[in-house]
Length: 462
Ligand SMILES: Cc1cc2nc3c(=O)[nH]c(=O)nc-3n(C[C@H](O)[C@H](O)[C@H](O)COP(=O)(O)OP(=O)(O)OC[C@H]3O[C@@H](n4cnc5c(N)ncnc54)[C@H](O)[C@@H]3O)c2cc1C
Image 1: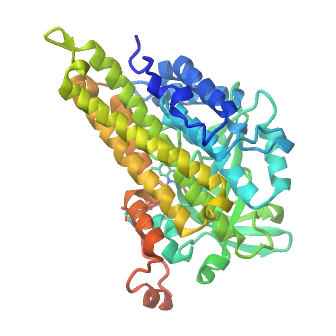
Image 2 (image 1 turned 180 degrees about the horizontal axis):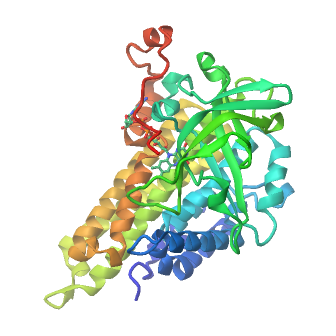
């Protein structure tokens, strides 16, 4: 038996997903994803990293082929409204999909998110014209398009996600010039953000959709100045670094730097065109809060993968003729892993439901909703690192071995704990939702002096 594919009723989508948060149709979808992961993704996990020798061609071909399969089974269409041919399923389902996909491979969940994310932004902006343009590409059978949302900047990305700064630290600018928006600036780390030639059409993918870019019209205006623009991939003035070299996720989620040098974009691509203040609401609610929830759901899937591998392995390894998982000391560790996953998943379902029902909870851009999501991501991050660590210990040296996959899940879990604000920001955001808002001491004087951005270390290494 391949480790991690044993059957455990408590982990079966029919039992683990609470029906007070999702529908039968959504559970069916989760089962479909689970079946796909077990059959098609699990055997290819190493190939998505290019195997032991990090063969880029193998990694990219496997990514494109499996991402295309994700599109074939409808995963990139789940949040697109039915009026554009999508499945119009809920925020809860979106996060169930991430959990299930991540049991197999985090990178594929990142690739799918790079379609869900822009869809959420354009839905929040009520831009049916842009949704239709995207749907024309993403909806037809047999298509697979790559997307990207660019937020992070060299002087420090976490300050962009920090409500205290009210989006004043964004340095990528947008100025209007007649029927065009002119973009100048520099983004670091955007996922699947590379140049068009890295996503050339092949037998699996159709190409790149472009870069949904967080911008400011004027940093001193803070929330009023912030905005979002869909930059088409062939726009003149774009240039890119090669993909970053990382601990993991090397090609399944390629991260690059993007430079915008007087990039001219037809003004219809400005998501919050003529709607002052809307850009900030979307960035806070749908780039950060909803994005962080989507990240947390992946941690649940990665943790579950580690638990399943540990369960299978400890069911086969014996001490004095008894499988070690039947000995109380080891059973208590497995139980502890399962407990943390159960709690994290319950939180995932509840917060996803709340985010999809702002009228019954709190608006997506509120400090309260950010706190709830951050509490979930923070808890899921710790739960996931605990599970990866314990799975590795329970398996002895085999846990550390390439062939048994826990080492990869551990690497993947670490980055997912850190993106979109990271572990420290999560906790500050929880406290802030409780009794905030907070301001950093010295911040007001520092802003008055015009020192809106510190010199960061990020970027420009390529
Ligand atoms: C695999 C991967 C995928 C990514 N995908 C994307 C993507 O698709 N799009 C995108 O735009 N970016 C993406 N990123 C970037 C990522 O979201 C940022 O790197 C991350 O938010 C951290 O920002 P930073 O590296 O600039 O750290 P910094 O902002 O320099 O922070 C450094 C440290 O200081 C702390 N810190 C700094 N400022 C604050 C503050 N105001 N409040 C609290 N703590 C603070 C942080 O917690 C951290 O510990 C990705 C990164 C990786 C590795």
